[in-house]
Image (cartoon, rainbow, N blue to C red):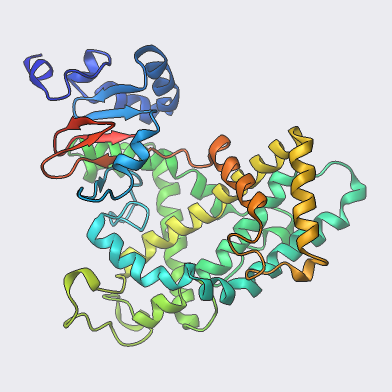
Length: 384
């Protein structure tokens, strides 16, 4: 009890028990009720709530610029718990600062203008497949556009990340891998809680057998797909072309696609390349982020457009005035700034129909820092 009363976070509101132990909040995570608990806590205590002895939850917009961006004269806040991969190695979503810079450097080309242009044939083919599939079934009754979007984004991300489409649109059915990927959220939460209590090594043994088996099967599937992608080489026009040109830092024998990257003369903050384990976790991150989350936000945008006919009509007018035929719609012609109303619609869609159910924590840097002018000591975690 004395620890709660002398803590630097003692001035922040929240249940007394939560100031003493992380157990109630962690249990809600394992049970899958944490989002409901957070909503109830913020309804009762306001925009800032103490949810663990060393952690605060914010629903104040100021946290975005103060903790999630790099402010001039301020040290960058480190990432907290986000995703807990089964191999124990963080991918690009959960990677810490030093590793994240190396990951970004290796993946940067994939998200550049040139990289997107190289990926365009792959993306266009899958979008055309979706349009054809929907068109052929228009006379059959109602079509679940959300399902078709999910199939399409799954096929696209499979092709871009693994060099092989999942074939959902062609088979008019979902793929078992994506179903298992969505089911990773529960074991990931379980592993995070166990790790926080110093029991990470026991997480697989402690979780329900079916959950652990699904986690292992998903990891093995990614290993297999990634090995096959490496064997395809580095000229596909997908995410990993330039990653493979850099080489793999340490993999078992024949998986190395070329020379290992020479980092011997590079400063620490300019290293390039992935280890195979890092690439495995990053591939899983990319598939998760590029499939269901993309389909979810697009479904939300379409739903809200249909609720607001005037906005729908204005968007149609902008698109049809910019393009004569569907062949005119390319990566280049839809670059940022060319369709300002479409960009505004998508940004608003992300705001009102956010697709990611993850709590991306940040940890206050050495010496502490401020959020909305209020000082937080070092090593204290915030989330939104």
